[in-house]
Image 1 (tube, rainbow, N blue to C red):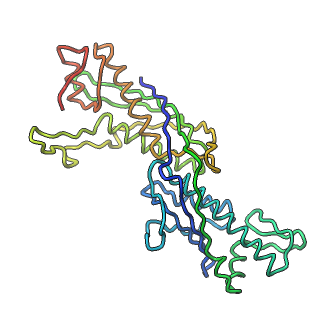
Image 2: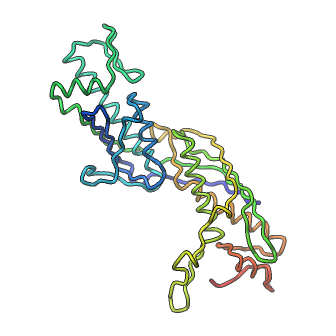
Amino acid sequence: MGICYYIESILGDPSETARIEFTEAQKVNLYVGTQSNGQDHETVYRQILHEDTGISINDINIVQGDSDLIPTGGGTGGSRSVTTQGTATKATAAKAIKQFELFLTEHHGLKEISFDLGAFRSNSSNIVITITEAANLARKLNRQDLLIVSQTTTLPGRSYPNGCHICEVEIDISTGTTEVVKYTVVDDLGTLINPMLARGQVHGGVVQGIGQAINEHVVYDENGQLLTATFMDYSLPRADNIPLIEFYSEPVPSTANPLGMKGCGEAGTVGALSAVANAVQDALWEHGIHQVDMPFTPIRVWSWLNSNDNSVAKLKN
């Protein structure tokens, strides 16, 4: 049994830019400076913009990865994407709402305007106008300056995801094969805008950590020739190597950004390496093996178990 309490810091570039464009088709393009590569950031960005403006999620198009359309952006890395881009998106939405409030006051005589539940309301009348309808009015009056809104924000400091990983392994003494049979994660990732996506990222990170700890091993020969150059020789974790990963969230909102987020991109891997290593060390301790180093491939573990000197496990390559 192995346990790991981890803490990490996230951020990288603290600045990010968002741009909202209201189209003639009554849709919205949201231009972002980060690039999703499987995490489904697009869904979270749509959620944030929908919650702040009332625009239907189905009417929001996320534009990413096109440098002709997006001149600036800090990219994806360091678990920064949703935290920095979400903050910029919220600021841009607030800027758009403020501009439309002034527009409706100046050109339509509405007074004491407030924005709530996705629509502008005037205390002096019964008029209710959605932000998309306000954009259509601006287009008719040729107010193109209201149809594209951009804002750059900079976070004041880092956030610190943390949590606890518990791993149970079983080792076949006759072959040295190590199997992770149970895994539990309790994370403080701050506010979770989309818990399902956060859980998925943690699961993926844990799998990557298990792979690095047990399966993956880069080997060179004495001449420097890479011997594990293909997946025929370099072992990646597969479904039958991974147990059901239990995930629990105990969030404490971050004070370093208005979303209260702490990031989750690397959290799974950060905790998994030590949890697996500690579990393997725990299993081998009673056999007199008091030092183990990743990766825990079958040949390495078998060699430790069959070594004449088990006080310190040693094996080249």
